[in-house]
Length: 113
Length: 115
Image 1 (tube, rainbow over the protein chains, first blue to last red):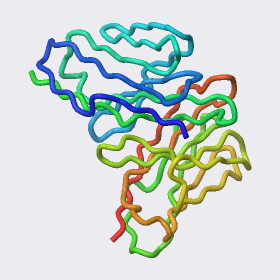
Image 2: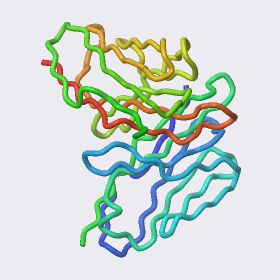
Image 3: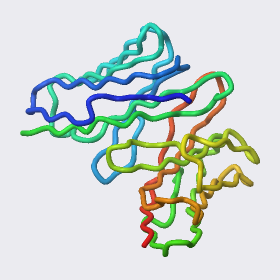
Image 4: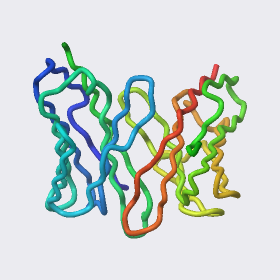
């Protein structure tokens, strides 16, 4: 079945440093979503990418979807303490698995002031 | 106030007992999902439903059962066959239709502890 792998599992940065998390799928995705989960909270939607090679920006966050629609990345420029949390990618399947949304393991980001 | 509600927030059960977790949404969403979250393993899909009276197994469906008799409700039963049921359970919903998934809204989660 579809597998979505995410690296790294943990990332510790000093405030002001950049951060990147990577997501790879074993199969071609119809779309990819990114979520953020604050400690003790539930995942909250950040963005969705659907086109091959798509790049979207939200302030200090840059999201990319690979040309083959099998990988994606989230880059945060100049991290702040408010960026702390777990970042998940979630791959949407097509075809007979239409509607299935598979999450990666997540990257836990710690930002030291 | 629209949203997705899970209850209870904390649940304790004895080993060997079945337990049902509630998930209700008033967002008029067609699709609903159940995920299990364990430390270091992210969110693993248990079951999902695209429409009333229809649901599909996810990646870890063994030991779980669901029903989707109403659009608003998608209860999850953790049966005694589930070998390691202690976990944080998250329910989500989304509009669902179309070629792509749409934004998923999550409930606050239920933390189940089996003793």
